[in-house]
Picture 1: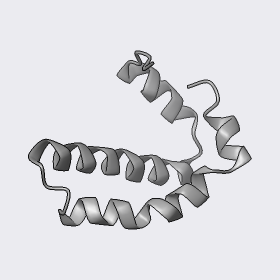
Picture 2: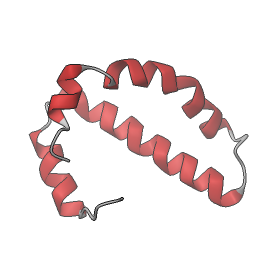
Picture 3: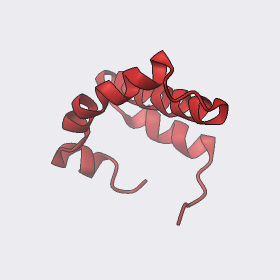
Picture 4: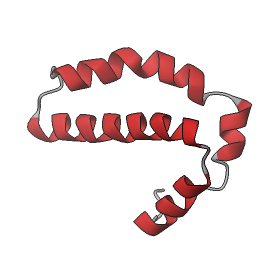
Length: 75
């Protein structure tokens, strides 16, 4: 079940992140938007989509850590 989150809530969380984590969030959001756009257009072979798929393993390694789980626990 998806829960409703406002942009203001996201902004509040972003303001609490250390600066070095903002790039990771930006990349994640960019990937989501690229994937969404590719799915809407039926272009899952786009360069952006393929880059997202290729980087998934690397991003997973960064995100699948106890520190990250704790940082995002209340979202």
